[in-house]
Length: 138
Image (cartoon, rainbow, N blue to C red):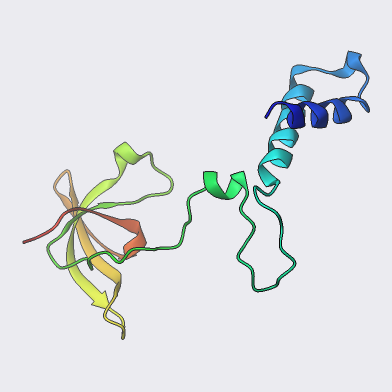
C-alpha cells in the first residue's frame, strides 16, 4: 500500500531540487499522489463498452448524489428545516409547509411554507431539496 505512493512521490520529487521543498510544495505533492492513487482502478479494466464503470477508491469514498430510495412526499402541515446555503446549519429556519405542489407523476417538487421568527411571519416557495423533514404531521 505504501509502495505505490512512495514511487509516485519519488518520481515527482526527482524534478524538484530538495532546497525548494517547502511545506506548501510537499502538501501539493501529497494531494497529487492522493489523486493518482485514488484514481487507479481496483479491478482489471474491460474493453467492453457495455461493461459497468470502473471501480476506484475515489468512487467508493464519495457517496452517490442521485436519489436511490423513494421517500414520502412532503405534505401540508409538516415541520421542516429550511436549508440556506449562506448560513450555518444551526441558523437554518424552522418552517411549516402550507401547500405541497405535486407534478404529473404525483411527486411533490415544490412546497410553500411559512416561517415565524421574532413575531414576523414570512412566506416562501422552495424546492423540496431545500426543505428537510423534521416532523411529519400525522
